[in-house]
Image (cartoon, rainbow, N blue to C red; front, side, top):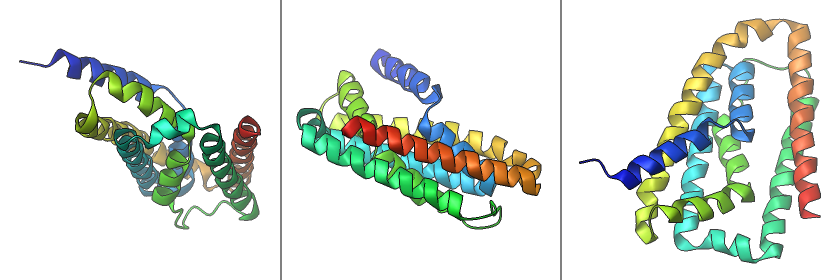
Length: 193
């Protein structure tokens, strides 16, 4: 017999995962710029970040972000600083190097972990379907679904790499990716200030 609660959780998680957001944009940028492998690594990093948030929600760290404005602002500012660093790094890199390793896993992990909105989401979402250690497999399922969706997206969008091999397209892509990342950092910083 199928557990109705698990079905409801899986459907809700799937709907949330399919909603485009910063994680989707990050994975797309990594896969188009660095190829399929870079995109899949970025997807794995984002999924690992989901596991970090699951553990944090399980042990109550996410509750600290909800109740402490100082902690929330500190994490938001750290995330904003990291986004600003990434954006400047992209813009300063000169040509968009399609063959350079991108550090997609690490960047995906850090970007996801330093997003306090994700922590608050898990604090609000997971407890609707379980308590205590029951949250761990639920978060694992969410991370797995995230990895499947974003990994598939990375594999498909990695094929667009041939289009961006032209120098003009690489310059445009670098400027858009860097500018967008900086803009996200500025918006995050404004929220905390």
